[in-house]
Image 1 (cartoon, rainbow, N blue to C red):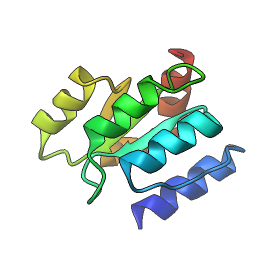
Image 2 (cartoon, one colour):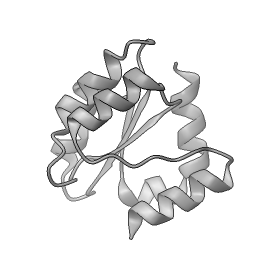
Image 3 (spheres, helix red, strand yellow):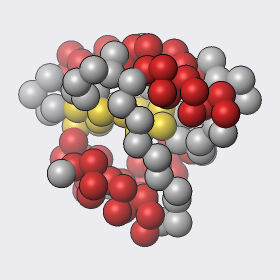
Image 4 (spheres, rainbow, N blue to C red):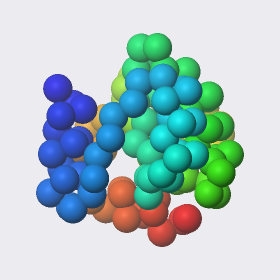
Length: 110
C-alpha cells in the first residue's frame, strides 16, 4: 500500500517510477538508465538494503542518491542506513508527510 502511495506522489511531481525488488535489479536499473533517485524500503523482504545502496553508489554513470525509509520503532536501522551510504533515512511517516521536500533535499546533494 505504501509503495502505491509513493508511486502516486512521485508521478504527481512528474517523475517516472520503476519498482524493483532485488539488489541485482537495482544494479541493472542504475547501470542501464540511471535514475535521478532511489527510494529504498529498508524492510523490503528479499532486498538486502546494503547491497542496493552499494549498487546505487557504484552505478556506471555515477552515484545515485538514495532516500531510505523504515519503521520509526527501529531507529538503529535508520541510523545504520545513513552510516551505510544512504543520503537520507527517515521514518515512513516522515516520508509520506514530507515527500516532495525530501526528494528535493536528496537530489540537491547529487
